[in-house]
Amino acid sequence: MDKLRAVLSGRDGNNDNTNILQAANEASTLGWGSRLKGFLACMVVGVVCTILGVCCLFIPKIGLILFIVFYTLGNICSLISTMFLMGPLKQLKRMCDKTRAFATVVMITCLVLTLCAAFWWKIFALTLLFVILQVLAFAWYSLSYIPFARDAILKFFSMMFTTCVK
Image (cartoon, rainbow, N blue to C red; front, side, top):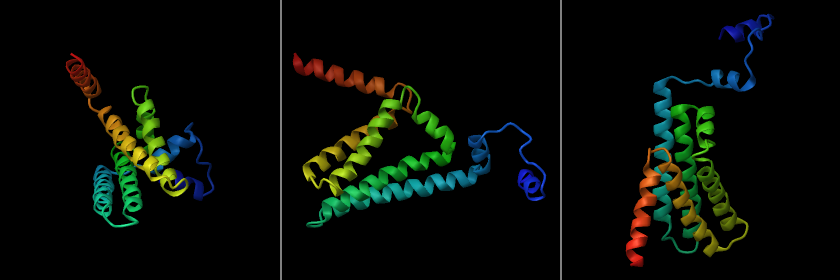
């Protein structure tokens, strides 16, 4: 607020060495209560959209398209909800961390390809494939936030594979 007053009164408010990202992060800081409310609101919207999408799946002719739109929108809202908890800049840094970068790229690519296959290419078999990949990619991305969860899943499936092969 002091910086805003300094700029509006004609004094130079750029005395400190902050860059644009730091200034934007400082300007958009929310209190913990507001962050929690934003997280809960986005998460509820995401879950409702996902459930609504599943319910719309059984509507003749347009059910599949509605499912795809609502399911993808639900995943996007769920992803955005976490930005309220830790802030957008920190969330983007964590998404691009070396342990999650590949999962992030695959997840966002699947989100985009699902919508492209549904609306531009209009190939429903491909759309369903991308929805399945979207589910798997979002699950794999989410597991990256739980310590050793992805290693446990890989070990479980490798044990299941070796027992099935014998």
